[in-house]
Length: 376
Image (cartoon, rainbow, N blue to C red; front, side, top):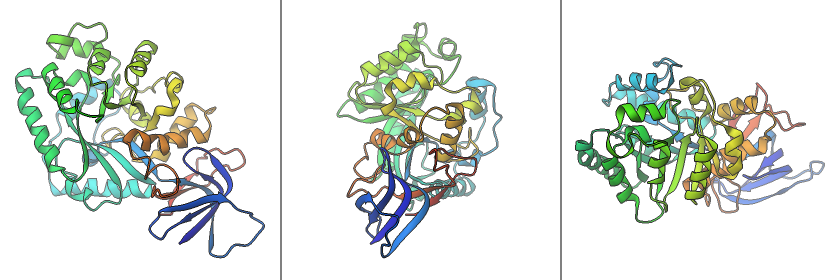
């Protein structure tokens, strides 16, 4: 058994001042309570900072870790896509090693669970040994309608490869998936409340990209991204990733249409690609369903949820730290359907335990010196 105390413990929802967390040796939560700092307690470890459940990374591309520092920033989504088209999609030991190192980095950065986009079997072996919980989103894309069946078949083969892991088959983005491929993915996910992830309103010129690249059903739609998204089965839980250029009308429609939804913020990636952030104050109208992701090393310098929170808090200084921490813990866990085990210090959960060190404890704000210490 292990007893931890801290100036503050964030339980996944709010702060407990002078909190005490009791765990089993393997990290299961036994109890969470207040303690008297003026009274000695045997075998009590005191943490000078904020103790918090392990973070949930709600969007990542682990297999792209070998692209760290290789792509040019700025230029918008079209430029980014053109660069991505030129990369080699082969699997080799160096790429596997970079993904392995990124997995270790995420663990050290306090990430206990991760929604990972999968386009190949590159990360399969390392995930068998990882301490991080992964939900694997087998992501499909193709604008060639004649190839829809083959692309879907390849996706099912990869899905079967990840048998034994938590997994879904999902769409890449509205501008990169043909109508027949969308139908095949949706038909596959139409039985039960399946979890899907989709890049949503991520490009400034998304409507133009539709007109240039798509054919058939959506080509000349007034709001093709919204139309595409609303054709995802309504009983699915949908992670809408980025939302950089979502407007109020589209946001309201999606919020009304999907009972189970999450809005995933990846601010470092947004600044890298489009040099702007999503309309957070609009998304805050559904703030209990917001979570945070790192995206990949193709568009980020670090796989750190703390780094994303620091960036967001500098742009939105009036948002309280507990709101950011909810997005990074319990709300991310809820989005992935793993809230019984991750994202909070609920009795019986095993979310991992981290500490935020060098925090402004008087005002409950992060500082430039704040860092993560992994406790369990």
